[in-house]
Image (cartoon, rainbow, N blue to C red):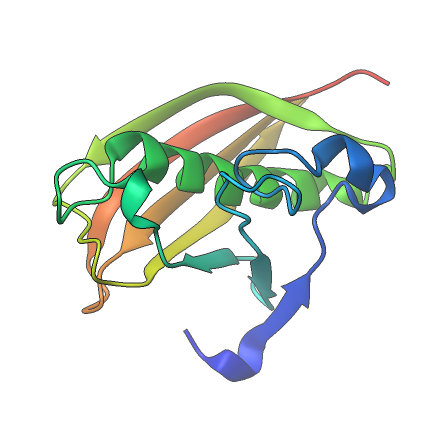
Length: 152
């Protein structure tokens, strides 16, 4: 993707930052967490890049599948949340279901790049797709998810 088309985006819950400061995926205060940051392309795609710590590996050279799932859950969550943010400043959503396909191992030696994009909104359900990409641009792990907008 073209760097000229990207903007840094704050986390959707910026107003309630303290509540999410300990989140394993994105919390800045969680010393054991991933501390993910996100960017948004003009087409709405959300991206995160992360160098996985050795203690998050599965096999010695492979990113643990649960860490891959966490990265995808986080980037898809930001995509879901930003898609409803314009309709209500206090809108929030949670993962209702997520399906992953592990295509090829994600090596520990690369910077993990994950992207997610809105697929559809149906009532309170938000459908999102995402993937982790290899250095050659191939999909290593892909996911589809359904998020449920909470009633406020």
